[in-house]
Length: 451
Image 1: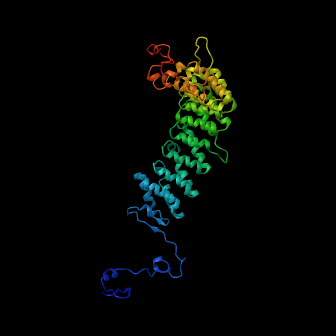
Image 2: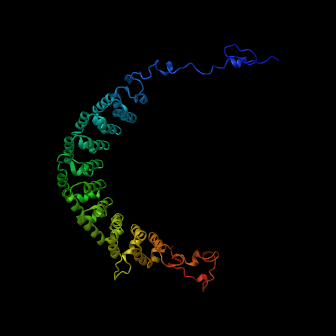
Image 3: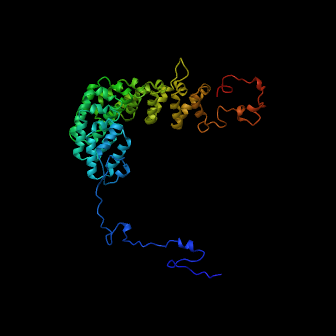
């Protein structure tokens, strides 16, 4: 048998493994730190020249990923047209991103292409975001050009689902002289725009503005236009937000007519789905005379308000912020007994669809002394409340061992009803009864009633 000798790569292979050895590749490469593969000439590690701007022809399918490269450019007007004509969301997202990462020259060109079609973009579902970004990335001159495009169109834009966002952004960014122009355009149609679905947000933004120079007399015109109508404004979904915004951001003399009219119609407003929030705002944040007037009214009609779907929210707010002072007045009012009716309002509230939450809140959050005042009265009507869908929730809190002071099983669970040993009560004859179980009383009550 011939001896095996190592075969070097420099010699031709012979023997049975010749084919396998012939296909082996040499280990390692001839690359060096200055090889051409690294794109650097000898001794020129930092000698690369900046890449020249590249232009992508729009006749080819657009490659947005490639266009996002910092030095890439193209016909920006073509992409803007895709947004206006085709409602192209991807084109809008791309241009917004390009404004963040592009060069100063590219940003200027993009913003200019947007300004050329400013109004169609402002009322476009995807274009309005692009115009808003221009306020951040455009030059001061370009921002003024956008403001000039808004001029004369403030009303239409404010009542547009997409344009209203541009107007709000403009109030943050444009010079004050253009803000004043926009304000005066809004003042032409105050009653309509204040309660408008979209324009109401522009009004809220307007009330939050702070002016460096003398501000325009906005509330003077608003109060004149809405005199005698403030309570109607407060009752609406959008108007309620505007009224609360006025409460928070306007001067005392400016908001006084609005507050007075709302308080004059407090009963109507408190019962409103959206108006009750205005009354809650006064009860919590109003001036002391206004707050006192509102809370006194709530106490006066405590029983009725506690059982109303929306007015009960006002009572709940007062319970949470009024402390023991309000709670004592509230309990005195709803625990009053009448000669013609022994059942006090507290029990009606406890069994009401909306009022039961108020009594549950008192039983869960009040101090032990006041909680016991309520619990004592509730226990007197336990049979009635257990038969009520909503009153049973209140009764359960009064029967909770953590609340009751009596030892033994919780009330409502007598030993003969599932609380005794297995085989008794519900499962068999109760031998502790002095009379046969078939003669047991089964009427509506604490032993056979609705639980």
